[in-house]
Length: 292
Length: 298
Image 1: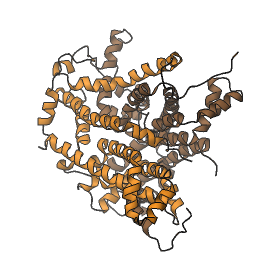
Image 2: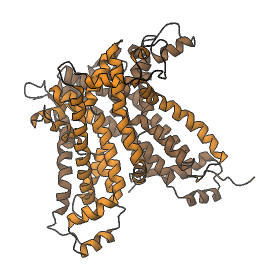
Image 3: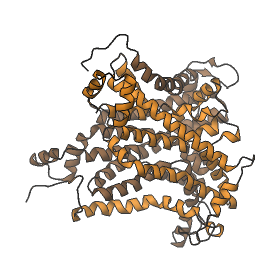
Image 4: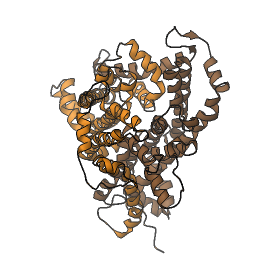
């Protein structure tokens, strides 16, 4: 009997021995994709197909009516849908940009500088990877109230800026940059700030892309700040608006279902597009994600 | 590293300051406040009054719902979704690593995509699929196949709600941890495998246990921590699906929902803080197990 040849990791081309993996992976992937494909079809269904009996998976006469309704609709207090979408886009952009900057700066200091407490800070951060924000929503609420942030635009932004997983990933990534490179730049007279902007940032682009995606997913999907900290309807976000559509879909709210379907597509598509564009960068970062 | 630390060098703190300010304000202080509040009676109007361990004693001895429903629910949910999602992530990552790159990228994207919107957006889809009348997809399918005679109120039924929650959460659990494990499997040096075959490894199972997992321990640990956090983060799913807090007969009630119930519905903030602390301890213990399994001793 010949020696066990075992696994061929990362094969460069197709071989029929891979069929057994595909036989398992493809059906599973199709099954997992069904609800997502369903969002796409559902969003384009005219009203009679939304409520057809028996229900149909595919759309037969696609229409944009749900989107038109969604964009022309105002909620009970007269706030137009576009306002929620606008809020979400602005909040998301600010949070993503600031999170990237803040995490990368902190990652640079923790990776390449020597100072007391450096190890302790990184360890506390690693511990904070386990942090579940929902667990402390009450003290958080009291604190935010105390800071006077209730009913402000900032309350959507500030609590999301420190992202332990972001700092963790970027620090691990900066660890790969050789110290000699920074030393050489310093000898050439580069200041700390120049080193950060000219050397660190270009070299850690994959990690930056990853933080951007993770923080995007967090803020874009977040309903917590709108439901707990904001009463002013005009300051709420699209994801929150969408969750109110869902809760009124109970039973057979005819108008609500088409809107909810269109809204869930709008929620989902940006996630998908951003991930597709940046996926190779993410995989590159994940290679250094291990906790030692 | 050769450079000797300059005693008056404040530059690290300039780079760290923004992160530390937000980290302290929105993570450290709330955790500390939760611990302090848990020893008080606080109704959000009067100043908190110190009552020692009463909240914890009450939680364990008097809160029947907590001991009979919430704790068992949380543990069942966590023990199935946590390890289940984790093992599934590993198996998928391992299988994906063995197909060519282009196919792998597409499949990984499909498998990862549910985790992107897990939560709000998906509640819409699931409530329609599991809708209680005959227009619900599952009911319609089962009625046509003759498995059911009349539609089932899936999301309102204490019998099914928990199962559906577990299913939906597992479906969305192939997230960052899954990606980390995938890149972990891909980055194992092939020479290690060859050495293993010479040492007498003769089936795939041995290969996974003796080579694959030990070679990617750091990613396994990262994935495990993400699985634990994801599991406890997913607490809102029961309320989102059934549309009510408390969920029907507390069938899908998890610690996070109980916390919300006491904090924002009954305004017993001190008591809710005690639940927070217990929840944080549970999360910590679960992560500790992962650390034991995959952490490298130093």
